[in-house]
Image (tube, rainbow, N blue to C red; front, top):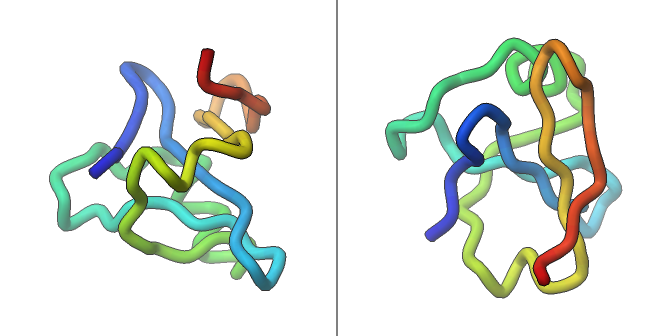
Length: 72
């Protein structure tokens, strides 16, 4: 189970074009950008695993916005 970065929330591209982000009930910090994207309907909560990150993902926070990332 993957939840967040040290100062970022985690997002992956969902099959319908919306971003997927882990549920806040898992204990992650509900960031400002995360809450904004959910409120706008551009993101929704879903459980994510390491396999979900294999084709790239997004990290984001209110200060830096969304940044594309990959596993190395």
